[in-house]
Length: 298
Figure 1 (cartoon, one colour):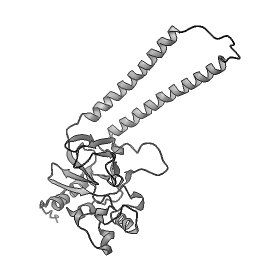
Figure 2 (figure 1 turned 180 degrees about the horizontal axis):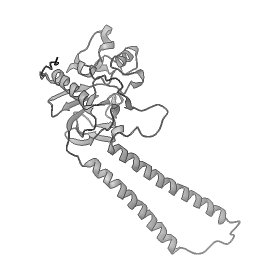
Figure 3 (figure 1 turned 180 degrees about the vertical axis):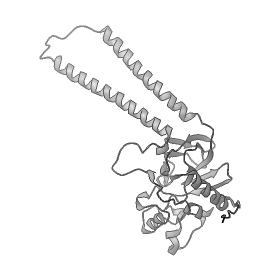
Figure 4 (figure 1 turned 90 degrees about the vertical axis):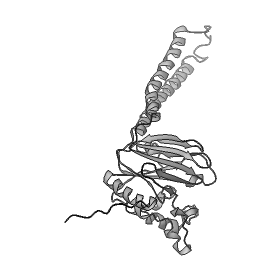
């Protein structure tokens, strides 16, 4: 594929420049949304129903365990103060307390039922694959991703900008920074940005078929709420519907060898018009499918 082309040292800075289908996708104002930021904690912004469900479930469980922790801690402190040896020199002799035992059996059951009633519909929503508007096959390789637009008959490989296959050394050198800037990214996106991105239209149901060609990988995009192992010999599926245009990043999330940290995922969510324009160019570039000329009317 096009990524096998290697240039001399003087041209190393341009080795990872995106192909012209990707070049023409540089839409002004396309915001980088799904990106980890140093010093911050918590989830990336949720731009799909599945991701929002995960956030809501996490919040619900956080509230429950916080209340339990505060209650148990308070109970321990109260018992330690109220029933210490100084205040109660004669210890109680009872061995059980029926109302308390009933309470500590029923209350946890009710809590688990609440969590189950809330989480099971979310799990089913994740696992029930809907009718796809667009199907993409993602294959994990050591150490890059291959993508195939199943319905459109073309595919491409996606390498991290700065990977050895593109003339880099997996290090943030001046040449790699130049490659990032040439692709429309900044130095901050090192280890996140790829030379070619998955491009999808906003508001459409995307089904991703995932497998591996060598060892187990995992296709993960936190802002979409998706994480699916890529197992050689098996074809798994996940899905999402991104509701906001932007650039989103993910990573291989299954330890897959010494360059595991260097196989990121880049997804660009664009308008339907921008996607149609990119798709036409991508078919011509990656599949050699001639596209009809459009003659502007006078």
